[in-house]
Amino acid sequence: MKPLRGSFRLQILLSIFGVFCILTLSTVYILLSTKNVQDRLDRGFERERFIKSVQDDLAAYQEPLFDYLSTRSSNALARILIDTQALRSKLPAYMPITANRVELRERELYSLIKSYLNLAESAMEEKRGRNISAYTRTYDEMAGLLAYINREIDDISTERFRDQMDDYGLFIASSGAIQLWNLCFIIFISIFAILILLWSVTRIMGPLVRLSAMAAELSSGHFQIDDIEASSVIEMDQLVQAFNRMKNDISNFIEEIRLQEKIKAEYMRERMRNMKMEALVRRMEIYTLQAQMNPHFLFNTLNTGMQLAIVEGADRTGAYMEYMANLFRHIIRTKEIIVPLRHEIEGLQYYFYLLRVRFPKNLELVLDYDEDLLDRYRVPVSILQPLVENCIVHAFRNRKPNRSHSMARDGVSAASERIVVRAVVDALRLELSVQDNGHGMDRGTVEKLLYPQSLDESSVSRVMGLENVIQRLYFFYPEDPEVVRIESAEGEGTRIIIRIDTGRKPCIEF
Figure (cartoon, rainbow, N blue to C red):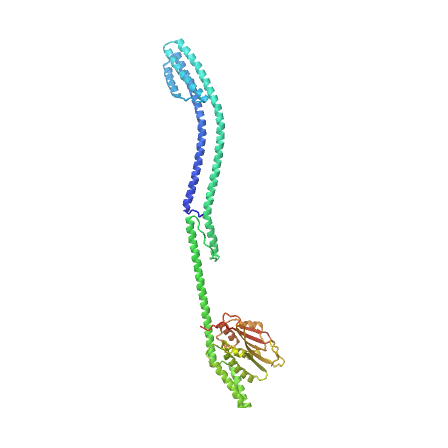
């Protein structure tokens, strides 16, 4: 059941008003109960005081009456008349007949007092008539009646005092009950006030505690948290709704900033990669225009051709020069970045012929491939010849001929220097490998070569080297970390493996 919603101020006022009403009612009940007991006791004491005052008035009435009867003083007469009038007016005119014996005796007492006053008037009349024996007799009768009245008053007072003692026990019991009720009411009101206070504090502190906890979560960067539920207090609901709105707005704003930063970072990475690709292609074009051969290789090739022309006949020299021309023509005739595998194999065949002429005795070249693969698959341009050239330049540098040396991985006896190039298909990957039995490389050099890096614009000599081939493969296949692998150890040769995913197109747009 959803609690009633309202203003916190109104709810507090209603709670205070409820406590005030309960406290007022309890106080009124206690006051009325106490006043009832007090009135009961006061009525008993008031009648007792009244009878005593009447007794005192009768005692005072005797003095002027005796003076008048003795001396016939006018002052005494005037005083008697005043006192008589006062006593008659003081006595109750009518008293109902009840079953209370004390009240019945009190009613008879008032009749006796009236009779006593009547006898006093008779005595004064007899005094004025100078009937000495008559007023003397009347006075003696009055004295006897007054003595009886005094005894009756004392008896009534004594009996009433006994009744009051009983009433006093009831008063004590009532007072104890009233005090007990007082204590119960005080405890109840205190508990009720505490409950009202706790209820009010809980309704205020509950949302505030949740607000504090959520603020701590937000300060820690956790914005994916549930909203705070509304309470039954309008003011707190307004605060909670404002805080929830602020939290959601901040979360959405941060997500938008993150998305914008992510898009911006992706854009900058793509732009940087495109710029590097563009620079790489431009360098390849420059290298192609320069025949894509280093001066040292071109000088050695031409020197060998000149020596063949002198020592031998023109046939071999012509064939040599023809292959060299075919190689140059092969290199400069294409402007494409991605070419058929046949294009790379044909260029490698021309290059192998020239190498075999240059190194006829101590260099063994092996080209192993399946003819069906040449036109079926496409590869980045110039990725095999630079690897073979790297073997010639670095793998066999400063190495002495050794006829007993063999390839570690193939286990086949070979010449002192051996290079094997293979092309096979493994599952959906075209695997190209260049293997030599040269010096080999340590692990640090291999990791350095395989680490993706930007082009060094000042290092023109490495445009077509091993590092450039590896970096170009990373550019063409940025999401394939297995596109190139190097297996090498010092003294055991090197094997460079290129694994191209045939189901993934190379990234060439920039």
